[in-house]
Image (cartoon, rainbow, N blue to C red; front, side):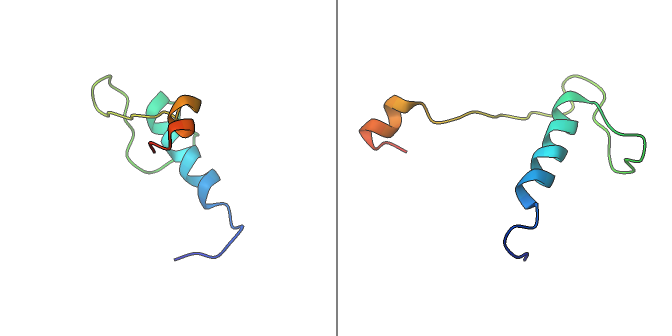
Length: 56
């Protein structure tokens, strides 16, 4: 668990972006996904028409 305003969303977004693009900083010691097909990273948003209908 973590508290409010500590950067959880930014840290998670940063890591997701690294894995999705294969671009890692030099200090990264975790797993690297360098080959296409290693990782499926779906991303998206709710369109305004879905929000208007209330179909989240």
